[in-house]
Image 1 (cartoon, rainbow, N blue to C red):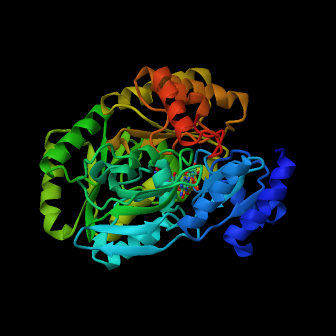
Image 2 (image 1 turned 90 degrees about the vertical axis):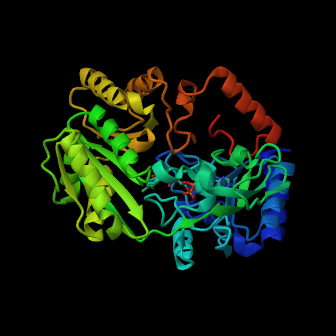
Amino acid sequence: MNARDSRVGLVPALMRVVGPESLQLGPEIPPAALHDWSDEKSGAPLALVTPRDTESVAAVLRLCHTYDVPVVPQGGRTGLAGGAVASDGAVLLSLAKMDRIEEIDDTSGLMVVGAGCILQRIHEAASEAGLSFRLDLGARGSCQIGGNIATNAGGNRVIRYGMMRDLVLGLEVVLADGTILSMMNRMPKNNAALDLKHLFIGSEGTLGVVTRAVLRLHPSVEGANAALVAVQTFGAAAELLNHAQRTLSGRVTAFELMWNDYYRAVIDATGLRPPLAADHPIYILVEMQGAAPHTERATFEAMLEAALEKELVADAVIAQSQREVESFWALRDGVAELLGRRAPTINFDVSAPMSCIGECVEEIRTRLAARFPSLQLAFFGHAGDSNIHLVAGPISEHDPTGREIETIVYAVIREHGGSVSAEHGIGIHKKPWLPYSRSENELAWLRQLKKLHDPKGILNPGKVL
Ligand SMILES: Cc1cc2nc3c(=O)[nH]c(=O)nc-3n(C[C@H](O)[C@H](O)[C@H](O)COP(=O)(O)OP(=O)(O)OC[C@H]3O[C@@H](n4cnc5c(N)ncnc54)[C@H](O)[C@@H]3O)c2cc1C
């Protein structure tokens, strides 16, 4: 069947399945639906469908499978790797209308949601029930839980609560041929054979479409104790993390590093008042959230005093109010303004074992400075969970120099046994670098899994592998 035939047969069939209000064709598709937050180029898709329930998703996939038409699953399109970008002739499958919070079970500490539910709504619903959902990231107002699951999102509190994978109890997925695979488990413990949901978490829409999920909830938190700390070396930062975890019984909820180049750049871009002088090599936002932060203040302060006595810390300022906690976070979240100021930039999201992070940063800095002496860099990241971000530029990744910068950075990461993607996924953007972090045997096994789940290769083709 050629492309023209597929349009002729498929479109009316899709119309019957989802109805005219949930189908847009070619030029009717809003431009925003073609892109995510990466600058990957979009193709010209055939249609955008927005089904309302799992059965309709299954029917859409059955049809696309029959007609051999590619399907690109889309959540909130806040992805940074190009995974949701439209491809030529594809059906874009948006989960936006499947946004129901079906149930909150406070006894079991869980919530059942549709994949299209916006992360922030999940936070609000959990909080209204006196509980909390602990995945949090800057795109919370737009990203969908299905997208968070498909990318195994990380974010600000991984150090305490883990990645998305650790917060999913159960999952419902529709496979490429329209088979509905229900794995809506509700228990933290369930070892009745292999836990299949993990195959789909982080698969970036290439193995199945997530339609519903059972999420794990935690007790609510009322606020936080937090400090902005300056240290002289990465070694001191790593020791401080161990010290803080030991003395606070493993309850650190964030340990965010900002190297001097980031700290200066973000103050410049945001106009925020620097809480500490801008002449220290590394700054750390240390946070411990809790149900009664005021009662834990003395313990938090004692932790910092002991760190000062041990000379781990060069200077520190403790937040005196929740507003001050937020002002520390504003420095960390000011990356958006920094990106705006320096655009276009090449943005890295890499990880390395904690013991190598300091070395990796210095090695990347030295190699880039030798080759590109005037290139501006800003290092920061969720370093407490081994994650480093780097903003390099202004420079476009499509510039040949951009490619050389990527080669230098990813080579250092490979040499230290790190990962080319800590939390944003591979999508299109990082495909060339995937072999830096996965062995040939792993890649071959991933290809076999793809073939098993999607023998015709219709699900998000050209992404990840
Ligand atoms: C300001 C900002 C801050 C960010 N901070 C973080 C951060 O701290 N940590 C982090 O991990 N990420 C972060 N991100 C990246 C992004 O928000 C996450 O990757 C998020 O999980 C993507 O969700 P989404 O709904 O927008 O997915 P989309 O961008 O729509 O899609 C992402 C991928 O998932 C697939 N997909 C989407 N929905 C489904 C579904 N229902 N079933 C199957 N596949 C699906 C798509 O095909 C695509 O491959 C940030 C992004 C921005 C813009």
